Image (cartoon, rainbow, N blue to C red; front, side, top):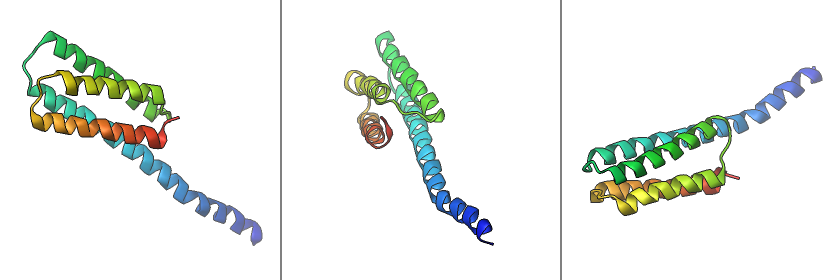
Length: 120
């Protein structure tokens, strides 16, 4: 009987960790999805100007890299820093509404928090 209990206890001990890892993964995916949504919404509210659109494309490209890395189980600190910088350029240099600017600033802070918690 002892041999049966050891594997069951081992599985039970690992279950919370697996759940925590799954929660962390989902939180990261939710964050990246939220930032994408906020970028789309904010861009709808600005006048088309080629310089502005270029900054948006850079930020989206970095968010795409982050999302792919996260899906692969990786969080690269330098890559997150680049994404934060690109998003900050939009906040600082585009003609955003105050509401969009506030939302994107919040997204920058959430990305920084995520970077501190999970990235190497």
